[in-house]
Image 1 (cartoon, rainbow, N blue to C red):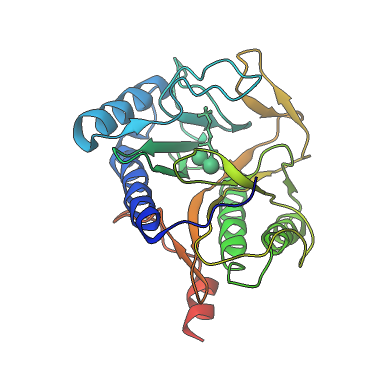
Image 2 (image 1 turned 135 degrees about the horizontal axis):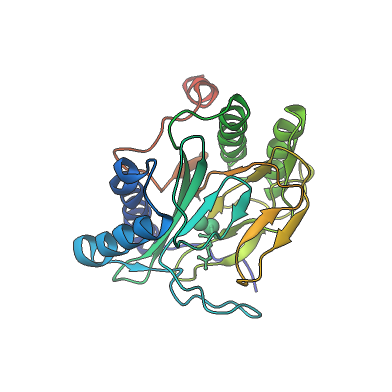
Amino acid sequence: MAIIIKTPEDIEGLRIAGRLGAEVLDYITPFVKAGVTTGELDRLCHEYMTNVQGTIPAPLNYAPPGYTPYPKAICTSVNDVICHGIPGDKVLKNGDVVNLDITIITKDGYHGDNSRMFYIGEPSILARRLTEVTYECMWLGIAQVRPGGHFGDIGYAIQQHAEKAGYSVVREFCGHGIGKGFHEEPQVLHYGKPGTGEEFKPGMIFTVEPMINAGRRDIREMNDGWTIKTKDRSLSAQWEHMVLVTETGYEVLTVSAGTPAPPAFVNAAKAA
Ligand code: MF3
Ligand code: CO
Ligand code: CO
């Protein structure tokens, strides 16, 4: 199996899917505050997708080989949860940090996958710094994308930045190609060496979604078959965008009115 080069029609479908995925995050933002349960956030997002957008939540009943079907519409990963937190009775409280990961499927069958971090009230200095460094990691990775570059360039940029800050990169989960499939080739590693891996070609579409731990990189899996936590119980953060390789560089597809601005270094590089 090889990496799919998307047709112009696919690209247009995935632009729409990316925007819709981002708009779910915009929609849910005002509800993400102390006192709300993760289950309520799931219910609200699910209703918005189904009733307002006419999209389908990709996670619901998603069952890759070796997994039990995922039971909810979104992932809610709080504090030391690295990824795939299942929404439920958990009440968000001041000082928590939570990642909401949303993937929608459009009527045309295209996936829009993205995630953002949210602070509940005032975060600790550590939680804020981890969240900001992880955001920079995602964007440093994205900024590597241009025809002729390699997937290893993304991993290297992310790993360098995370480790310089004293943090660690989760190895067991990675970004992925995306299209009519939720998880397509290739695996987009968030660590590695420049110039290694497949070459970027115009028309490739994939996610960049680094998971960065404040402590050690080791993970532990919960008995629900999905939730992944840090082994040392340190905080973990993640951000995710979908990226298209263009003739000259890249285009981020998961863009909406509420998308957080890129770090200043991205704009500076683009203007140069
Ligand atoms: N959205 C996640 C990703 O970025 C995948 C979640 S799979 C689920 O790849 F089943 F847990 F929702
Ligand atoms: Co995701
Ligand atoms: Co993803």
